Image (tube, rainbow, N blue to C red; front, side, top):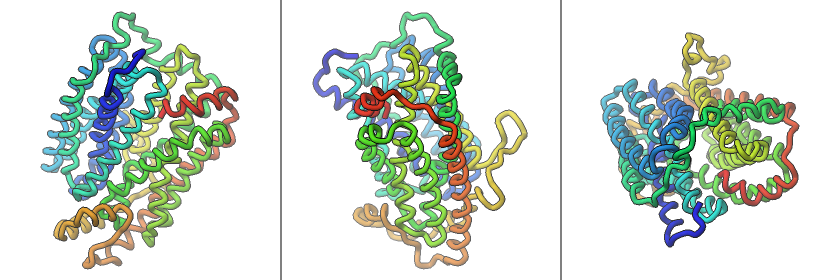
Length: 471
């Protein structure tokens, strides 16, 4: 960590964060809508699973190679340039309709991208005076994701395969920019390889604590319904009449920034258990709003469901990082945070996408139950394709109209509502009820089983500083 900060260092690091999350948000936010609109719906599940698969293996890459032998900025530059090239190949294979090849390439891209999330943090922390400077740098990552969504909306690319070209260009731009960043030596250079740390064995030992065990289990389980939100919200909003779903979904990131500011206040007033419960309850409410707002496409219910993302993410994940930091011994806090990411964004989201899109339990022929009777099955894509066809022949909206479309919804005048919209919206209602039931079950399990708490000193001290850092 630098004792002093050179001029413009904050700006340089902020640009790094902006480009990193712009490159991800450019294609990931509306992936299901784009694939469903271009006859690639069958590849959607595998495409989304690429992210958690890469998240599982990224810590091993960082621990074995990136943190030990090479400067962080050079590793990030090479990975993102390679990732940009792979993303170009993804765009070509998607255009040719080669869904299975596209999924394999997407896994390769995410294996390049995921390690850079840790590398960018390493670079930032190495060149700021103290950790309290990190939030104002990290927030530019969220802004980058928002700008990517707005760019897709204003360009009319929310349902287009052009999202991959935008992701390719921005990935390579980040790769080139990374070589201009300050030199950041590998943090573990010259240190002996510690397999216990690499495999998070000490952090796994924390599961012997009943409170942390319940927290870890519920954190993993709650990410299963989260896969439904990440996987199908963009297509759902498109079917509901929002013409620029990418822009509409950025409302969730905007609320995330807002609630991040309020977390210290709420944390001091509510404590860890209530914060986590409010986060889980918000997930239940979001899915209920989507379910019962779907049949009549009630605009305020759908927009509120998107806006709840700020509470869903901040109150659960950020509070969870704080709780983990408080419970872990100082010497294994890094391991503990890696374990939480492994359980949530790795295992939890992997099974979330597998449940949402269907498939077998890994390495078996056992089909995962991704529906409960009529609940859990999304709309079949007929409406998505019809809307894409009708809107492609319409006149392109002006910049002002595109800006307002993130709040408004409309259908083409010549769309047969009874034939296409009514059955699709009924299917979407049944679809969202299923993750609502799952999230409510996890909420009840956590409410009954979790009785741990953080120390009063931690609740007050961390509520003001480490909360922001964990974000």
